[in-house]
Length: 144
Image 1 (tube, rainbow, N blue to C red):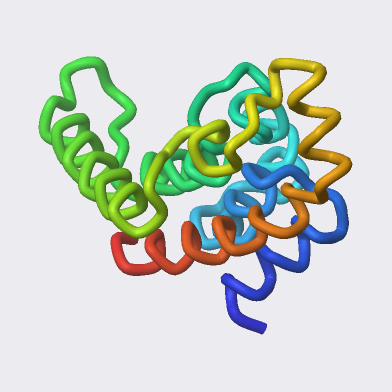
Image 2 (image 1 turned 180 degrees about the horizontal axis):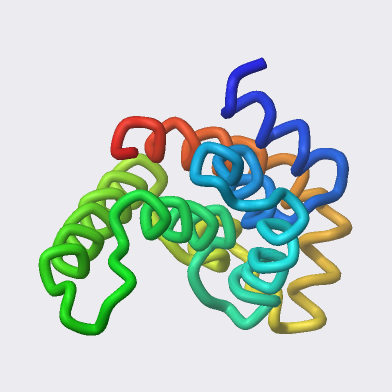
């Protein structure tokens, strides 16, 4: 199974979008699967339904950090490389999908109970988010 298909399957099984993305890359970087799931859980649904960046993208940024991120305060080269790759990744995703925020992608603000209920009624998340998870993983594979 490909990483894209694996991430979509994990999302459809109930993991958050951020968990689905990070978890399919975790072992490539020596990150324990359970730790990856715990670390990334709160980033799903636009960072815990706070009307912010798409959780799949948050998971991808964690993967990019695992690949390019530094561990020392003075590792400016790693920081700049990470920022460059993340910026390019986000611009590409936005070009392809029209937004990088959960609200912008779904057309519903999940932090608003009324809009969240309407999105649930209209099955917006199961209809749209698997495509965003798939696209995110595909883009990450190009940069890591």
